[in-house]
View: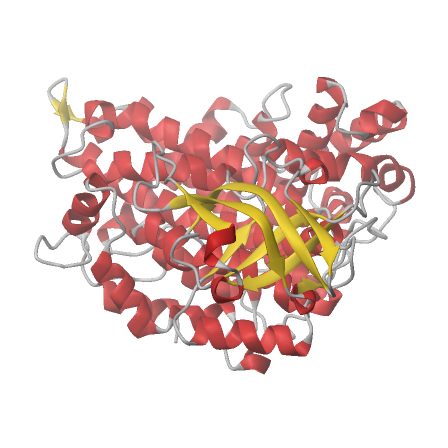
Length: 556
């Protein structure tokens, strides 16, 4: 199975008679329902097998291939992307990385049998502050007794099983919580109450539910790992999900940009077409550059899970920066779509649904500030020992088409990385490229930013390495993610002759702009790069090709 096969099953989304086309997707969204025909299509494809490691009968071998298949779903309908199966991935990763052979076998049987596994972590009073979650399990007769609430959980009523996060100790610290892998059949019905569905402004078809447990018995064999390992287990699992989710949501931006390209070539303004206006062309070119930047950064982050799983900062950096870029890109597109970006009927109604769905999807699972909190404590040591001292990461990390060893869940790590090969790319590029060339000037700009950031990291106070860090400290971590993305783009383009330099210049110009300071490109250089980007995007759109790095032809 492959993304190409999945695209063929979905067919032409513009066909009004297509039962999984845009018209059907929008109708289901208005009813606040999941698209039933879409779920049947994914059943026939065997989507759940994508979430199960090959050793347990599934197709999960490579993180990037998983993301590629998921991107195809999110490109068609984010509700199907999250509501059909991605929530099962979020839950099951904890089982693959921390469960026993028996627990993994049980999870595989559920998923391969068409079932769902919900990830039951969230409590509205605490959000992503898992260390203060109140839902508690206390020892009882060789098992546990569970009491408390969990809320805003995708697919909770429809799931046959769940991975639940609960307090198992009153002692403060990171060892106070544990995870449990439970089936609904194991829980007495009179001790578990389903809470009403939580309505949302986006992802209308995704059922967000909750549970209230009252002295509910839980088998002792349900615990994942040892007591007190809940936070550690979750952080290891997040390494995969933080990289896969933004790479998947990128599919929604791909569709939105193609809708915008179609719209501006049909919409008449000031005696011509909207696409004739320099401002409109520049905005679309910049969004295209953003899309390519996200794809390159995600691609490197996904490959790092296989080749450098000890590089634990890359996944949260990917999640943080790409989510921000994604939402800003959608807003830029809405500016050129005009009223068509708001209408819930007509040829471009899919755009407003994608916009509404992408916002919660980009920020779901783990907040962006939580990603920065993970990055901040590691920066002073990396700045002192690694930045501009470490060599660039191996070429294999950046060749997005190259083979990879199978994903090893036991190697997913938490804690302090030993080095930073991505930052090493910036120093190497600055030395290799001609200082007068546009790429060389960007490399010097980013290398100088590393030097400035190194000094800022050295000056961080101990309090700035905690959740209570100052806004300035958070900004330091945010700037670091921009440098990682720039390094990823430079290295990916260096090894891929299919990608045009104009696209790279557009990407680096956008990333450099996030750091402030004087522009690197001259006005003429920027205009030339953006015109080239616009032309590439239009050509791909007209040729029915994707706008991501694959440029793969699709049916619609």
